[in-house]
Length: 221
Ligand code: BG6
Ligand code: MG
Image (cartoon, rainbow, N blue to C red):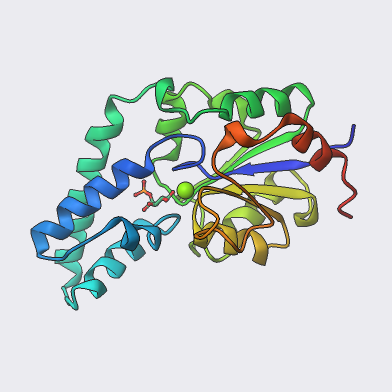
């Protein structure tokens, strides 16, 4: 069996934390007087914390000083951390463990490619840190998704080339980043949102292990 690199996004792909980001942003937006809907939230998925706030403020045509923005960023993250403080492996999304186990058994590279600065504590709480050969998160990158930097850094960390990598993503920005990196993109979520992906599944329970086996053996280069 050949060796590929499988890069996983974190929020909304491995763990069900996308809902906590949404709740924390929604509360902040309401406090500022901005209506923030689940549709608006799709644009924030995969996007860095700083850029997310800018997008929300733009929705309400609000300009703010850097000091005010820093205060709001801290407030959002503090609320988000209260949600994830309690989390454990029960927040791992259905079907994910089966795929991680299969990849591990077949000695594939497993990499995390997340925009979140909270990625490592979340992996620890979910007790899955040991599956990962490399981690690239929001603390490592200077260009947020849809820039491909996070995934290219991931490939580099395991000494692989982009054309040998497969990315699992739930966000539009993340799918665009994977495509720009020349990696195979697999969307986890709704077809009408993630239509730019090479493959789309509602969630990991729809991914047959034979599909993973084919990806491993497919000649990409
Ligand atoms: C991404 C999420 O994974 O990380 C975004 O999809 C989030 O919603 C971003 O804003 C940054 O996360 P954090 O934990 O650093 O605020
Ligand atoms: Mg995500």
